[in-house]
Amino acid sequence: MAQAVEEWYKQMPIITRTYLTAAIVTTIGCSLDIISPYNLYLNPKLIVKQCQVWRLVTNFLYFRKMDLDFLFHMFFLARYCKLLEENSFRGRTADFFYMLLFGATILTGIVLVGGMIPFVSESFAKIIFLSNSLTFMMVYVWSKQNPFIHMSFLGLFTFTAAYLPWVLLGFSVLVGASPWVDLLGMIAGHAYYFLEDVYPHMTGRRPLRTPAFIKSFFADEPVVVARPANVRFAAPPVDDVQQD
Image 1: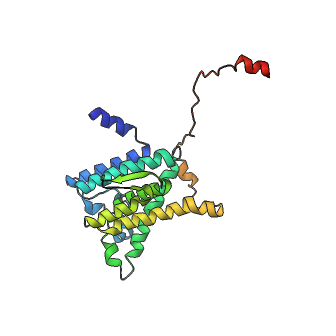
Image 2: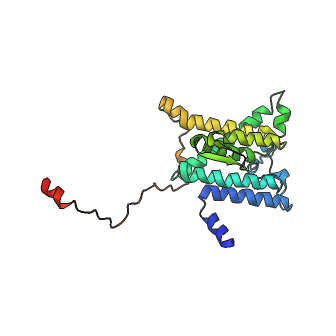
Image 3: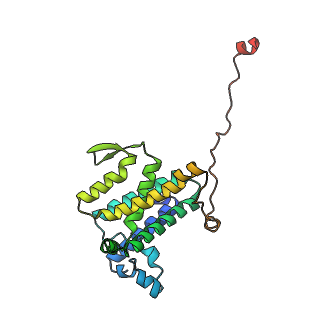
């Protein structure tokens, strides 16, 4: 069993493995009181006045307490982050990292701007960790890129992947969770999907081209389709040769 888990972990692509490891270590560290969540949450005042810039990153690593909800989000993080990196972004690690960076920036910007709007500022002030939203963004992007895959929710009903974000949003509301977290992920995911997949087809321009300095950090290898070795083709029938 332990060997199977180790193999599964080693086979994960680099970004998925790094993010999953950081999230688990951070959450376990907080549960054991080794790390304080008060040093991790998103706080604009502390970021600006005390230069605690690490909060821009650490708020995406903490998934609250270790419970069923934590396992639920770890499953979605491991599954859909891996699916995106291995399929849609295969051979394009830098582009995948840039997608996560774009999503994190959009989510942070929405929360900061929303905190300044009078009627919704209280709702946004309660959102101090954006880890769940970033995970939901990956689910949304995957569902838009694979809309016709058939899925089942707890064996109760089936649907296509295009409706997966809405099914999960409805489930969150049923269990009493705030829909804001999931909605933020959907907004960030749709922004990325539109700018990366829809807008270039409309205009021929790609606004989310990964900067060269980010690509310099990743040694992406081209995806090569291997040809079978020592393949021999049978000679044509003698009758066909004589007819020619």
